[in-house]
Length: 159
Length: 435
Ligand SMILES: Cc1ncc(COP(=O)(O)O)c(C=O)c1O
Image 1 (cartoon, rainbow over the protein chains, first blue to last red):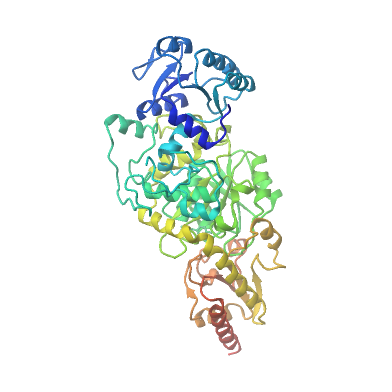
Image 2 (image 1 turned 90 degrees about the vertical axis):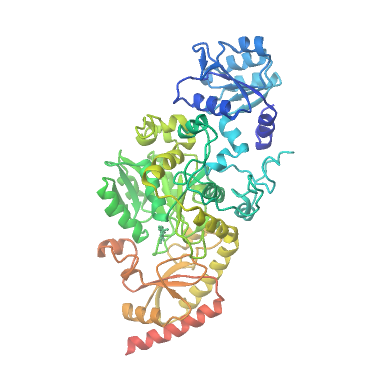
């Protein structure tokens, strides 16, 4: 299912524990490194870089392929994709084969074939969103930065 | 906990709730005033992540503060933007915005009919810093297009010009600016987001003096920047955002932060280095003000209309410039951009010129003679000798200030009392002119 609402993205992030990041970079000024570092240091998720070009990022072991990760740790809850749109279908097929529950296409990673493949295989699909931004929307991070979370609630967060 | 369904909450609901949920730390229902200069880190790793901008959190109140952030988010919600950066004043909101986009050698285009302090900021202070501003006649789209060159970084206007009261053709200005790759910055001080949301008409950045209607009570000085999130900051038009920054270990803001590039740079480089931050105490006062904005603005508009109708009916009044009056040159634009009212700040001139104007202001009992607008109390001033007094004659004419002009900011008193006082003062002024 393609997730389009705030509530759906919140439910996905609340339920997930493992995130495999396809195309994660060890270069500290790349957006994917920012997202990796944010998710890792929050402590809530186990994050695995998937990138054949690197051994590890900040001491976290990287895997050459999603299949290699799944062979050892089983299906990831979310596959987060930092690839060019042309490579998105390949990432979608790998996520399906790895048994992932959801696939998350980062900003600009928009490809109709990849979306249709993942959706047809029963994965939850998020498109053209940043998993760091959405995660921070719900954990108070965005609000701390003066950013518009769009959230309205008279309940205490976490209560 | 069931996640709330997506819902587009109304303006009044957001004025009360956006950015100010119950305090996560204490459950306090009112927004606490976090009067702390600095915030402890969880660990050295946490500190490093914060300084590298890889995680969100509080470091030091010059860069961010929980009470200030609550105000920023509320304003961003009300203006319909991606996020906000609050500043020490309206003028520093403008300067922070411009310094996030432009440096020495760069150029801006601005409509000429601006607040006097803005004109001096642009024509004198920015010029000294090497940023050149070309002023064009209001809504002259052909002149705007002629003025935009390769080093132009933004176009600047006011929703309702101070004090001439003319309404900007926001949609036309935004379309022309975008066609030339440049963002539109709009000072929305006189309208407030209740009467106009420039982002809905294509504006990219909204700035405002929170000192006026946002606070509403004439207590605190402050400013706010809100950005739409729609402008392509990575296009190359703004090298400060799309090339490696020596101020931040060679980070390329557009590449790293995407749609957040402008807001991030405005905060972590400009606010950090220029230092015009908002006090948490003042942010609290603005939050209190915003809760009642949707109720104050219609009352301001109704009183302004009553006062304008009264003045228009009087023989002593030579002219009146209120975009809310049928027949005003800005009336059609006001109908389009300000359907709920053209605000409550306008100007008029008395027969008998400056002499009559001075006698009129001195005879008022209930209207406060001071240099501010947007207070709950009614205010009056003579711009040519005060707010716009530092301008050359030519700049004064271009900004729409006439020597006999009187500017009023109509407050929330009983309209009958305001009119009673105006009537007394008009009679006194007529006597002064005859004498
Ligand atoms: C339209 C407008 N913009 C900006 C400002 C500057 O705001 P501040 O006095 O908060 O710096 C003013 C102040 O009068 C104003 O009227």
